[in-house]
Image 1 (tube, one colour):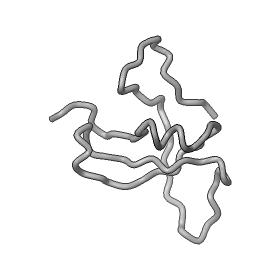
Image 2: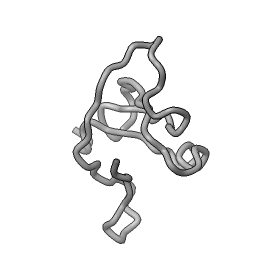
Image 3: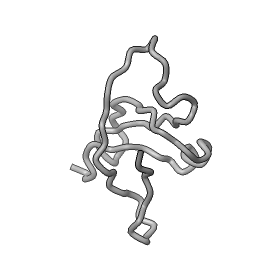
Image 4: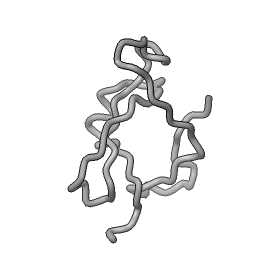
Length: 80
């Protein structure tokens, strides 16, 4: 499993995710990553006006840092 991190050396607000796989699981199935996840909202674009869903993303660090940092995923990185 790869860790998502900004390797550009800048403190850009947006970073592009590496290729990832997304799968549906039933609500009654156990969380595949156990307790090591953080819930990240997925928005249509960076304006955050249209919440599409949330993803449980593997998290090796402290969840509160992601919440305070405003971690979110966007399908479209432009304002269009």
